[in-house]
Image 1 (cartoon, rainbow, N blue to C red):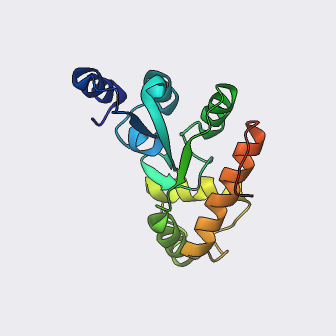
Image 2 (image 1 turned 90 degrees about the vertical axis):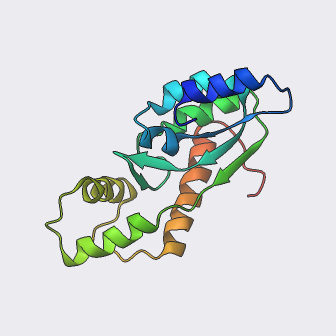
Length: 157
């Protein structure tokens, strides 16, 4: 199911107590859905969360897009969620486009705009070099900070 409504239709139709859902804000955003509404619709059937974020269909560092990640983590914490969060490293396009912006600062496509917004929120400029490893560390630090801000605990710290 590409939308939360479709996921819930499949989930309900299968009616199997062993089947649970995996939530991914970025996937829903890329399908034109509101991440918070998707979360609210699917949360009672969800046991697993993919942590990645998206702005205008372009994946950017966690917590800097339309994923409403902070609100979702706060709700999970308030509800006593103690399951898994998978930090997804899908930032290769972000890293590559940032490099192009250094060479071609006039780029104005949606992805370039998303990079600029994400960089601003991260305190980066287009001149700051960012490797895939750096981007993943940024993702991890953002997730750790968002968990703390939401009142949750990171058992791996």
